[in-house]
Length: 130
Image (cartoon, rainbow, N blue to C red; front, side, top):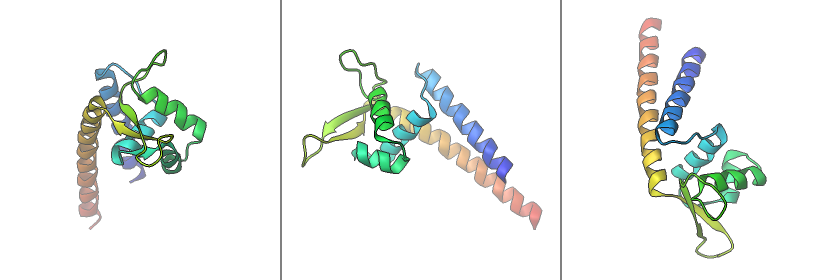
């Protein structure tokens, strides 16, 4: 099963890379992690993202900057947008842009497809073991 899980992980990362290249950008593993964390729980603050991912404040800040919409001299992928927190305007909450929602949907289809294949593999393993 470890081999199947490793194969599953490799296939998933390859397909995510295909999604990136189809959209003319490449995300690092850490960028994917932050992007998917926000996709799973829109409106997260940087502090919540740090807590969920285990990345330090400096890393999360740099990654969020790269994932957000371009601004001034900063280049960004335009997948996330920051908005002021409803009770503290100094705090930013992060949401998916329309392009981010599209990418999350494509990524979700890839993950669901691989999970179905993985479930099928486990079912076949159980039949063989019986």
